[in-house]
Amino acid sequence: MEILRTIADMKAWSQRVRSTGRSLGLVPTMGALHEGHLSLVQRSLAGSDLTVVSIFVNPKQFGPGEDLGTYPANWEADRDLLEPLGVDAVFLPTRDLMYPKGFQTTVTVEGITNHLCGKSRPGFFQGVTTVVLKLFHIVQPHTAYFGEKDRQQLHVIRRMVEDLNLDVEIVGCPIVRDADGLAKSSRNQYLSAGQRDTALSLNRALEMARERIEAGEADAALLRREIESVLAPYADARIDYVSVCDADTFEELEVIHDKALVALAVFVGKARLIDNCLIERVPCKEPC
Amino acid sequence: MEILRTIADMKAWSQRVRSTGRSLGLVPTMGALHEGHLSLVQRSLAGSDLTVVSIFVNPKQFGPGEDLGTYPANWEADRDLLEPLGVDAVFLPTRDLMYPKGFQTTVTVEGITNHLCGKSRPGFFQGVTTVVLKLFHIVQPHTAYFGEKDRQQLHVIRRMVEDLNLDVEIVGCPIVRDADGLAKSSRNQYLSAGQRDTALSLNRALEMARERIEAGEADAALLRREIESVLAPYADARIDYVSVCDADTFEELEVIHDKALVALAVFVGKARLIDNCLIERVPCKEPC
Image (cartoon, rainbow over all chains, first blue to last red; front, side, top):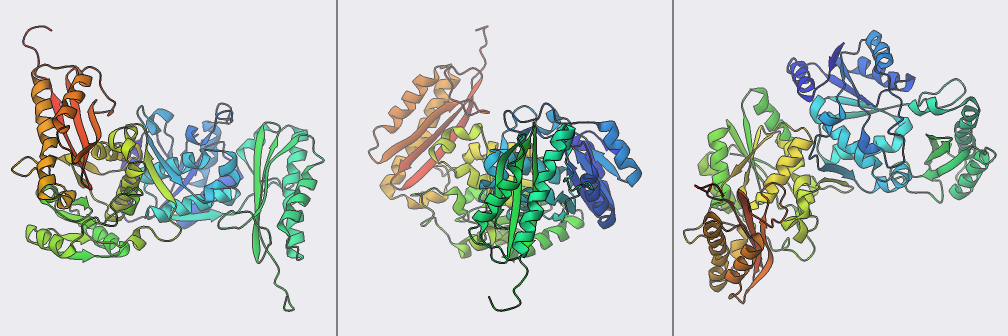
């Protein structure tokens, strides 16, 4: 497994690979790898001839007061997870290399970023799109893999790729959960045992919403209130948003027609946790 | 000369060329070609194995009330200028292909765009960087050529290329002038004979500033006033900006040390004309 620490080395490695006609998959991460990340890596290993994992805690996607300073990092543990899988290269740049003095450029996707995490975390998606575009230029992947836990991010990146005429295929991969239903997240490390119990309520709320929608409930505002009721008993949970929205535009729905994205962001202690579920209504058997 | 009207055709042509190891130069234009553009084309023909000229009147770099609707366009004349030079391909997309329904992405360079044309024309440089990045992704040139008449644009594009880790060499080419000193511009077509006389005052003001700076004048505010005095007698000239600024940051200077960029934007009738000159002070022979 090659460890590439400079942009020039990464570009040279990538050009060498591409010139041999082999396909290149990229899994962009911020490290603190868990099984969610590893599922993306496995998907890339299966679908691309060679796989690069980038590890870069991107300061531009953290707002003031967020957890940039404490974001978990453990390069040795990450390396020990990636190497046995057969990852071909890890790109591990420093902040100074990615954002040298005088850096002034930002990539913005409008519209879909006005909702959910974009609304809660101003500048977050700009940070994401800017760093991902840089990574695409540096690594030159044919395919890049992103998790559906950050479903809005996945859509924002697809939008950027299409708008900017990039030749990178974007593959979204399903959320990976612990046995008890908690979505894997690097930020789960922040949770105490009690907070972890609270955190399980996110998935329970989503499952409740799935049952209700599949059973025919179409009133999105009612569902948002019901989701809030699932979370309400937990004193250590503070809702950032509860959304029942259009799965393409991320605009809040009033009425659920064929499908809805149900998405949550909840602070549990100092961890801001997100989770989501794309729910399709079971078609009526009778005309309705 | 290949005429490529779709993004897919342009990409395919470009990939074919690059796969043979030949170098590709791009001259991005908005058409209405004049000798300024042709000097960029000549430079590309001399420096690259193959040359693509793009012609696209980019709506995103025009503000409300600007001249998007009347911007000169004459494809047949442009073609007749390019073909005899030996240009290999012209990329001629429509607005709907470049900005399809749902387009939401913008590239922004901060800092240097807060001055001069960036200050006068909000959104202008975002329009430029967005379309140029798209063109770079579509055409995949090794080298791209831009005129120094739009010197701030040249710097903004260099900044974007560096910040986003693009592998495109940016070449700036000198301003081309008519025999009487007027900088070549597609917008010169808007000028009546009388307005053309007025327009000559831009270059005269720059030449005055050059003489004054080379002779040792270091007071930038004084020079700005003197430039304004050159333009003042012309009733049909309306100054947008007169700048004596740092040639890298575009911040206004108080004192000129070794060099200055002198830049003007002046409305003459409905034409907004720009011109500039990078002036270096003649070093003192005595310690000063």
